[in-house]
Image (cartoon, rainbow, N blue to C red; front, side, top):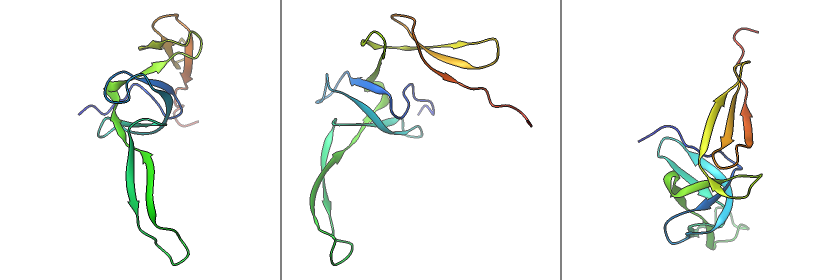
Length: 116
């Protein structure tokens, strides 16, 4: 499986396929090894929680399950549309994530400095 995911933690994404298609939420966690992401409010699963101490409650809790990263698209903060991500390298070595639809810069990744 691919070790790169096109979305990051705290990105706003829209689910494009599956039972939660059309839901918009924030990425809570990414797992690059498996290629899966956890999206806020999408793919809710029930977890049977056992009490770990005498005063901690047990019960059935709802939490987010993982979704394959290919089933989500980034929502551009400027135009508000689901879009693919382009990468543009600047002169100083930093890299920008750019919206494919409107061309707005989503965020900048700083280049690591060597030995400084």
